Length: 432
Image (tube, rainbow, N blue to C red):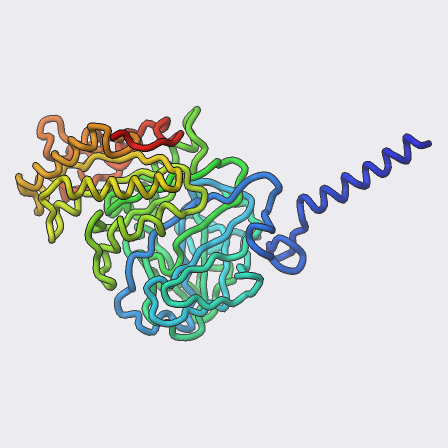
């Protein structure tokens, strides 16, 4: 009799503990029956962690958007690198001059790749500190509360925002290589994509998507220029070199369980800031590394693919030491966070309209220092992976997109394959 009573009490304790442990989901996908709560206290599962699955840097203020997108719904489409059981997003008003008010925001899985229609049963309304509306001050960002949703890896996700009033210039990422959509009126929770008739080649306001996962153990974040941005990759196909890297990390045996976060900005330089309204330069790597890469959710390792624009774009840097010093400053900032840094050699650009023999000499000098092992913790030799053996100053024809500077899809795949995945593990300062 006593044993039966004890067993019954134990069973009750287990049931109550399990209910508290798992939590209760509501119809709208929130993490409890009434509201979504503080994002880290309402995790969708008991074991796991938040890891970034997608990111894109805020680049500039979108031209001709002084009134923002008042009374319009923006449906961004982004592609996950790893999956999870919950999700949250980050919105940015970095380049805005007025407060940005979002009164309706949703997240859903796309019914088909690059399609604005939501998959059945996946639409979730987002809240911000339990409020369905949020106002983001100029220069600031905000992260949503989490929602419970089974997010697959390598899936397209729809993030929709509605702003009822003019908000000033739109913070955007211009070279998305992905079609997103815009609709008139508040269509944020519309599962059908029929209202989203206006196509857009940009990502607006959205800068990150995180997932709650017990599979990925962290993220590798890539700081780069147009080559990392994937400016010549096939649109809508997710064939940037970072996408191929994510595929390797998901599928190869003994690979680190990492997501991949793309921190590339086309035209970006290590040393020189672009204009606030420039569509393709962005702040220098030294200015933006902390915001766009080092502080991303769950970052364990960093890859740097930068320096070529400092040589090619005015004001040109002919002194290799200046560029290398800038790269070393980036490494120092990563080391301050305990992050391992893999650095890439600068790729060939022979045949490009900006090619000059003296500029290529500077590139070779930078590469010599990178290969010496005294700049980064480890090196990925993108130059060796992409160059034409018959003419090393040029890209291999099969890897050339046609402009003699940016790789083709095959070239981006070769870049991802050149990285030794074991280099992403561990930590430690660069040798001096």
